[in-house]
Image 1 (cartoon, helix red, strand yellow):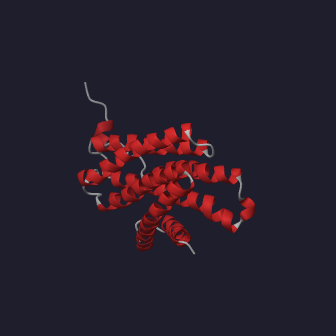
Image 2 (cartoon, helix red, strand yellow):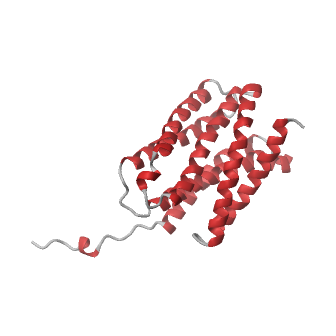
Image 3 (cartoon, rainbow, N blue to C red):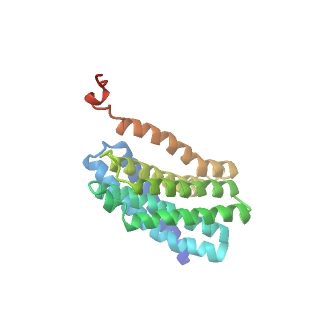
Length: 236
């Protein structure tokens, strides 16, 4: 068995663990002991998975497909960003300045550069999955814009950390489910393999994440009513 095959098996095992931990955290009571434990397990599994994915992406880039390898490296950037933000939003929830520190800003610019690069690769060099590559470039661009806007001024809402955590975990969920649907599921059920499943596997989780984000925002971050005195008309 080659070193790459060993890494692939390890990657699959860590991905399965991450998927189970993600749903355990997602279905458990938010902030409860099970939620926190499953969340920590998820982040640990994802950190190990990303470490394994680095040499695997390098092998694909050098030996198999430059476009495919470049796309995998780009996916590493946006996934590392989501994992980092979901963790630091909890750890730095009382310190916005610390949260938006050097690592945050470094990832912000890395998202921009890598998104522009992969968009150019998708438009000019890709022969397969061009739509998917270009569409995913938009994630990095969106991340850059939203991160830069957030880093400019301290948010007034004290629940900013919860919004950041939810958004980052939605990004993590997209990455986890894309890996399962595009890599894991076709191996378990080969009859499902094909271009239709490929497009659904890559783009479907994005649509689900958008809908889930709207629902979770309304549920956990409802708009607070204005102070009573602020709603009263000024006399005279």
